[in-house]
Length: 483
Image (cartoon, rainbow, N blue to C red):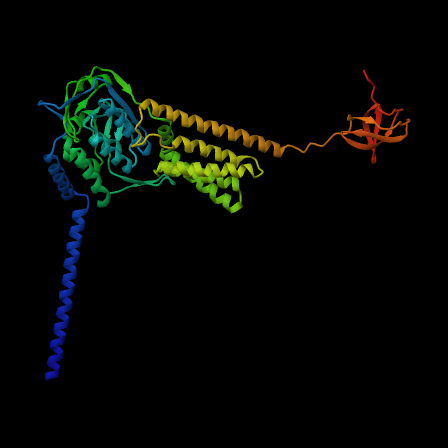
């Protein structure tokens, strides 16, 4: 009886423990689900992000300020750059160069934006560069739009302006596949949170509306110029550059890099043009172009390797490098690879018979590699004029070397493809060494060699003869008639 009671008691304990475990697991699942719901994009999440953004905005205030003193004056000329098309490495380098140029001349920088967006990493680099600038950077949306990454840039500028008829917004990130051309939106916290934080840190601190900044990312809100001004995400609406400059004249701007500056402008404008390197990078960075280059390069490599076609491998590798460059790879590394690959291909072409496709590809790689090499650097302490001269000199040397190499390869290939030239006996002239009667045989010296001949007419020793044919091992000659 005691054994039965003990067994029953143990069974009760086991069942109780099992039920307790099930209840605990259910509670944990419920808590996990509740936490997951909190992390999903929704009302609570948006409110939390807005609250955090407001906290950041309440700490400091940069951008346009009303009244008060100022530390220095910038102007009177305005530097203008234009960020157009896809934002990538090229536009990043272009903006960074323009900021340095404006700082050297103590001039404000107007960044005209007409872009559908672009890559996040270069955009974040541009945002940081704007914040660290020692002169005011004014964002100005023109022509059509400044969507996605363009909106991030506009929000980070010290003064934000829009042209009537333009729109901004749609900052929700997407993952783009350059090979297939497809994309899908992303709302993962790991991706969303850094973007919201960046907008708040560099947008809300300029007086931009925190709620609108968060909604740009979560809900892809879009605003016209008038709506953006009413929502408090821009400072001005300007009909043109001249109108914008007129509205900015006399304003005071507080910079995150330190100090308050006054804009004293006389209406003069200087456009900062991109270099050849920037233009090449920008063309290749277009998603359509880079995707096409990647696809063609991969296919050319695949089929060329399968068929053992070396010229096709060279072309495929070249296209693949350009596609990787357009997809955001470090242009300095790609430029170095282009130079090395081009030198190898030209060397191979000189010692390999063929059509010249390998050498032509190598020359293109050398020229593009030289064009993409960075000329200016942080530690290059030279004047702007000297740097421009150095750029032109490098390009001239590259084109000269490329042209000379192309000419050399052309001559080598032409010589290899030319049919072999045989010495033509008919018409050759020699001198008789014997008296040779008509139909008789004798010897002559021809091109430094002794030949046995048969004469078709009487020939005396020392006479000049002309070869008119060949009979077996004997040459047929006749006496040359002197005119």
